[in-house]
Each structure stands twice: as structure tokens, then as C-alpha cells.
Image (cartoon, rainbow, N blue to C red; front, top):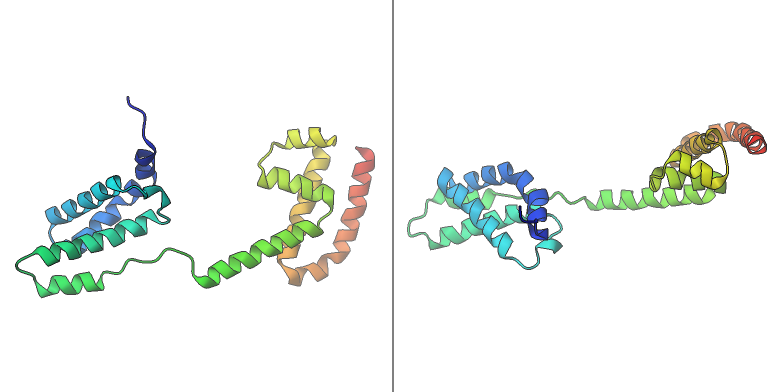
Length: 194
């Protein structure tokens, strides 16, 4: 069996899962099942002929827009045009699946809050949290490399998660300050024991 080219893998992963939606959209544009299938196939053929396929940020959105444009091209070439079809094409709107400016700003704010929380966290907790949750390293490997027991590593991870959660929920952090002091004492005991 021949090896898949990068464009083939991209096509399988990014385009084919949305084929039913493409066909449904093409049927709204063309009103004829065979013409709609031809429209989708023409869009696929043009995608394969493109040089910049890898730089398409939203392949599903791109193909939907391509279907609309191809339908308009066909409409321009047709000798007889139904007015309803013109209206259908004008009403065909491709939903924008990119995040809204509000969601982008909220996401940036959340990332900044997480970075601040990590910076404020005790080094031992931060190290365990980053290695276990972000880098996906095995717990046993982390404990062994840090020279601590698995139990101590798990306690530090749990404390880091609590600290991160509290930092992301500021209204709860004021009530939890007393609990932090008690956990600090527990950590010192754990470090002394092992």
C-alpha cells in the first residue's frame, strides 16, 4: 500500500469528517442532488490542486466558502437562472467558527492569571504540577527524579491544584488563607519524613 502524502493525511483529518455538512450545504445551493455532489467534488479537486493547503486556518470554513463561490460561478455561466436560486446563494452564510474577540480576550486573561498563579506558587508544587499536568510525565518518574516519595509527590500535586484553583477563583481565596497555612505545615512534615 502506498504511503500517504501530507496532503492526503490533511484531507482525511480536516476535510472528510465534514463531508456530510458540505453535501448538505451544496444541496441548499444547487437544489439538485447530482449538481450538489458535483459541486463538492469540484471543491475537493480544487483543494488538491492548491499549493497553500497547509496554511488554511479553518479548512471546514474554507470549503464552505469555496462551495458558495463555485455555485456563484456556475450561476454566472448558466443561460437560464431561477431567481430563487440567486436568493438562496445570497442567504447562504457560512458560520464563523473562530472565537469572538470577547472569547480571545477572556482566554488571554485566563492564561495571564494561570501564569501569575504558577509564579506565586511554591517552587516544589509548581515543579510537580507543570511536569505532571502540563508535560504529562509519569508520577513515578517525577518522584524518582526529585528524590521524594510518590506520596509526597501526590500531596504536592494536590496542593498545587488547590492553589491554582483558588487563584482562578479570587472570591474563594480570601476564605482559604487559613487552610493554606495548615497545608504548609503538612508539607514541611512531609519533606522532613521523606
